[in-house]
Image 1 (cartoon, rainbow, N blue to C red):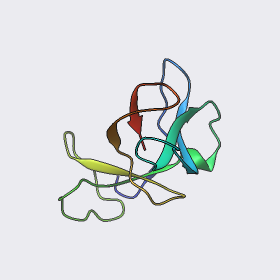
Image 2 (cartoon, helix red, strand yellow; image 1 turned 180 degrees about the horizontal axis):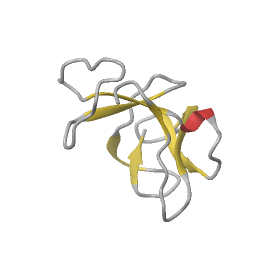
Image 3 (tube, rainbow, N blue to C red; image 1 turned 135 degrees about the horizontal axis):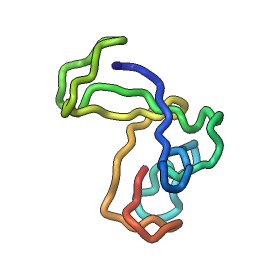
Image 4 (cartoon, helix red, strand yellow; image 1 turned 60 degrees about the horizontal axis):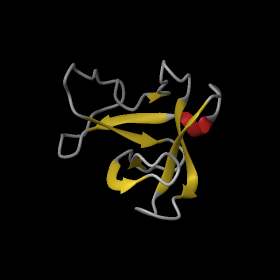
Length: 96
C-alpha cells in the first residue's frame, strides 16, 4: 500500500537493498545504494510512493499490479534510481 515502509531482499544473495548518507565519490556523486546482509537495519527501509508523473497516492491506498511506483529511502528521503555510470563497487550500472 502507499507510504508503506518495506525492505527489499535479493533471494539469491540474502542481501537487503540498503542506503545511507554516504555519496559515491565518482559517477553521479549521489547517495550510494548497496546490499546489506542484516534484516534489522533502518538504512534498508524504503517508502512506497506514487510513480513519477502519477497522481499522489494516499496512505494505505492499494497499489495495483503494473502500477508505477517510486521508492524513497526512509532516512535520506531520496528516490531510488539508476544512472548510466558504472558503480565503483561492482563495475555494473550505478544505483543511487
